[in-house]
Image 1: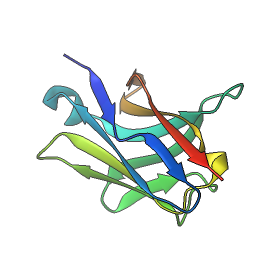
Image 2: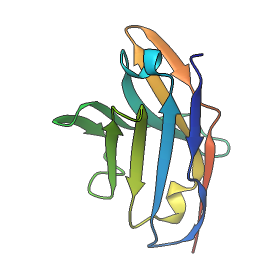
Image 3: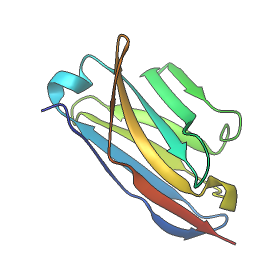
Length: 115
């Protein structure tokens, strides 16, 4: 109950693509805006993308034009399609569900981009 389960991370060469998935319980997903954050070693966790609805999405400047966030309400799942990955995208990626002022987090999935 209330868990966020991420998948899809891995090792990819620069220029490659990955798609991350995050599935939540229906009770969480239906009431939440969903987002992705990432944390590189020695760095603070940073915002990557958030989806309010299919017409309202927000991205960090560093990923605009390369990453796409989407959600499938029937599957209680949010996706992060990542294209043209670069070594600086290497990080632990976390799924976030926000209900009002409250945040829920997944356990993280590692994305490593090699040169």
